[in-house]
Image (tube, rainbow, N blue to C red; front, side):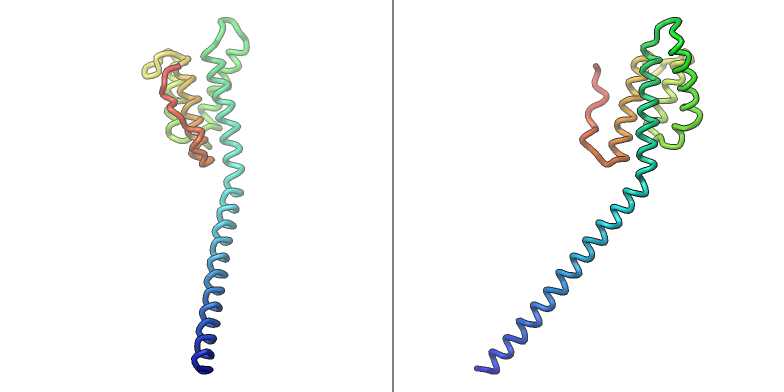
Length: 151
């Protein structure tokens, strides 16, 4: 009987030790994954902040252009800034969807509103494309809604 009890005690002790090692290993692995994810986010943060800043500016500029008033000096400044963004900074952060919307807006500013129809619709498409791009970049799916619905 004592031998059986000793054998059972040894087996239970070995199982508890093995279980402890497994739990420790799983905890270590989970912590490593969390640390890697945190470092990845920290490395992306400057890009994400710049993308947010430029998309916000592009949306403001296109909105100002879409709601232009003849003779308003702010419109000429907005037009100039649009082309600066178009040919420069936006290319650093934009995805293909934003690029297509910005190109359509540029065509519309040059008199060919084609797929947009109007300057206002082009500006709205830029804003929606920026929102979708930010949602993807930041990983926040709640920001995405049906942005093709008519206002």
